[in-house]
Length: 405
Image: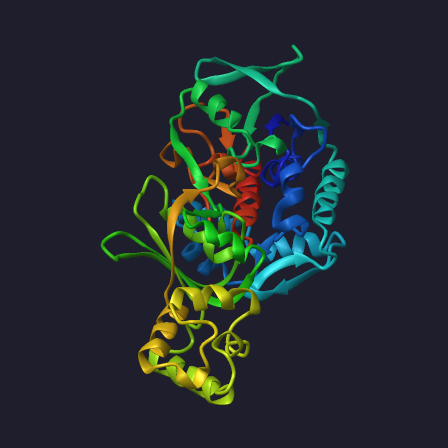
């Protein structure tokens, strides 16, 4: 029996502790006053715990180092995640995009199930335990020192400290410092899954507007499409957020002169949308232009679309010219904004970057540099799109690390 010390009490750390405790004595350290603090706020507090797609399809939604995760995801799959929580009394449900949530819509139910399992397995949980330094001898961790001065000595250590997003939850990048201090290299952390800011001040007029079934694209100054996706998005006081925006945010890092283009009616081509507009114009032929688009567009965006189409809002519909109508169609399918950048990295759901995967054995999650050290979760240079994939990665890597002591 070995003594296993796990640093970080998020989903990867808790799963690593649960798995490792089958044949070992496990101590789980977390700097916070409770476990799963970041997990608690994920999915707006609902916790999108995994995705119902076939596990072979997951890799399409993992832009950073997907091949590294092959062993982890196939060792502990999304079906294993579903079975784990179902068997522990947490009923799950599947929503749009195959996203899986607890039926209660409470992330606390996911955390409680993990905590209950930790206690039933006899895991020693030490909260408010911040690691200050790791001491190495002969390419092995000898012991770690906490900021309180306490010394923790184990046979095996697993680092599961997360990235550097949402630092108020304890995920402040300290894991990178720990890994670097023992000889690992760090791929520079950058924001991923983060809202996008626009330069146009009038975007504030659209704050709170939620759109579904729209197309969101990011293009560069040469009109090359860097990213394109279909789904849901939300206007904010600074720009946009929502699933298709967050997944596209990674394409903005260190790039300038980018544009965001929103197609409000992607299911129709230009001619089909023009025909639809003509039908509405016929219906409202005696009304002012500003009162003719309510069947086509959300009320909150109509005045913006009219202004951008450069057609007098008080003009009678039956007086609108063919060219003005086509201008309107172009605006609806090419609502364009200048991208200022992304929000601060502290607001990112996850981060791109972390411990270099070339220095980790993908079949065990063990360090190739320190003999008794393993890694799991977001501290590694892996990340995925929204949809439950990132939590599944955390659980899968945690399981793999914990089962290869």
